[in-house]
Amino acid sequence: MTHSAIYLDHNASAPLLPEARAAMVAALDSSGNPSSVHRHGRALRNLIETARGQVAKLSGAERSQVVFTGSATEAITQAIVGGAKALGVAAIVVSTGEHLAVLKAAEATGLPVITVGLDQNGLIRADEIASAIAKADAAGQRLLVCVHLVNNETGVIQPVERIEVLVGPTPHYLFVDAVQGFGKLNLEFASRAPDMTAVSGHKIGGPAGIGALLVKGHADAARLIPGGGQEQGRRGGTESAAAIAGFGAAAEAFASRFHEANVSALIRVAEDGMRAAAPDLVVFGEKADRVGNVSNFAVPGLKNSVAVMGLDLLGLSVSLGSACSSGKVGPSHVLAAMGVKPELAECAMRLSLGWSSTTDDVEAFLRGFGEVVGRHRSRHGRAA
Image (cartoon, rainbow, N blue to C red; front, side):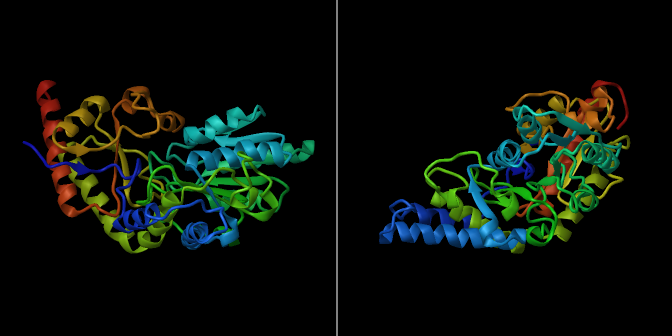
């Protein structure tokens, strides 16, 4: 059995939207430096400012709150490392299920890192954040609390609103990694409590190599790259007008291209079909609210490295989990934080859909999944 190549790994990187491609090509056809005052520079500056407005609209931010960066990882590092230096915080609070970009940035600050756990459904234990805040208040210390809006592996939507209530009326700062929630959930950044939020271009169909840090004025001192004063002095380095234009165009087009109800329905079809082929299927985080485009699942005994390669040979691209580990195959720290046993975590795979996904894609995946599971069952003398 063979399939044409089908991409089912949108959480790693969404295919480039046609609108983003067109905007990038137009920008690449323009010469100059966006900081120059002549007409060529002004033309590129106009592209950047248009994109700033487009990203601001999708994130519910004010234009002035959008700082373009070279990636979401850079935005995260600016918020955490730059924030730790500039905002007078004594410690960083992170959950054990955060993206490695957040965990590594927290470690890089050199400050004490307070970790809070996840429950078995993959939800951050907000009560542990409340406890950390109470202790810091008693000691007269300020914290930088760092949480993700949506877990990149499981799709679990975190209790950020509750955390906002805990942090909002205090002198502490709140940073939200909204990379996987951007465009799928309403961020409403300008009117809500987070002081800083990171978003990414390539997760919504823009190009890789471009992100943004949304930052409120009172946290604006969080800087990482001084440079020559670009981005109003908040991020140095000549802006990539083409990448920014592509990001902006993707932000504008994503709302009409990505239909939550349709994608959620496809995920439900996929999970039902997988259970029909493998009744012992485990879906991680299924008892929590999840964004509709992702399913993290396991067939007990079927190693993910074997299954993913088997699916790949059939032309079906799914993920082991996070795609940010340079191709390394290892246990998921997110699933470990949820209390998943290592032998089951080694079977975890992630199916993530997006703006280009179709019913035909899911049907092809289910045929391939059935073939891989059937082969595994026959080798081990077990009925499917």
